[in-house]
Image (tube, rainbow, N blue to C red; front, top):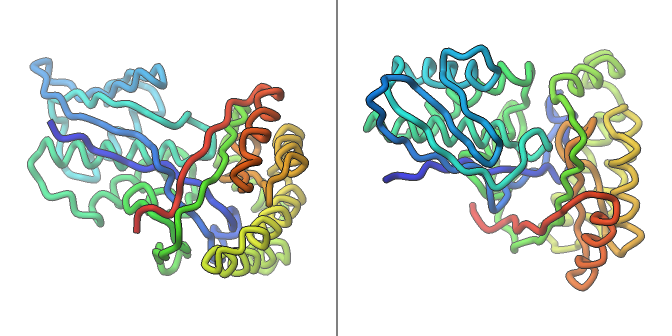
Length: 302
């Protein structure tokens, strides 16, 4: 049986600014969502992700069901009688690209079931249809990484430009705070008058350039400095929370080179990079704050 995969993601630098044309430095996680298509005689298109306590049919009145319908419609597959049974190694709603990972895995599984080629353009269009329903104005970076994996610089105008760099260990701390990408994108639009001329967005774009150069040079201290500044700017845009600020500060005090929120903010997750011998202390501080973090490896795929 073919297992279809969509990778989760983190944004090292550039979230929100990427919506306005600036670059984002983003990477696929070494985990995500996997889906297996299981033919069924009941004739209904179903999706079952036990790890998320999720079970829907394409005609249900549920956001994920509507997204499932949008994916299969974009692929022009009708309503195949198949159960899409999956597993998830990332939490939903945590700013780790879970919805895009799910959409990409679903699209790949449906194409496999239909014995059609898994063309990246078709997968991207189908997953993007789902993301628009869920998030309103997605940048496209989540879908690009869910498909391609690896690490790269993303621009809305040019897509994902993959880069090659040594593997990097990143600490990820899902806060458990509920959040809405669409609400956070709208908040930034309000405070910036939805214009790319806002100096905070321009600074976030510049920090992406600095951080990318630092990553390629393996200057983790400089990358961490860019991450720390980006978190301050994002907080000024109104997308951080007291908990996210506290988790970032705990990581820095415990020896991280840098820490910031990742993704839309308003909840979700924080990330940190640190010397390896400091990782245990950072994870312990996060556990003391009620957050179970993990270490992911990025940069392994291109």
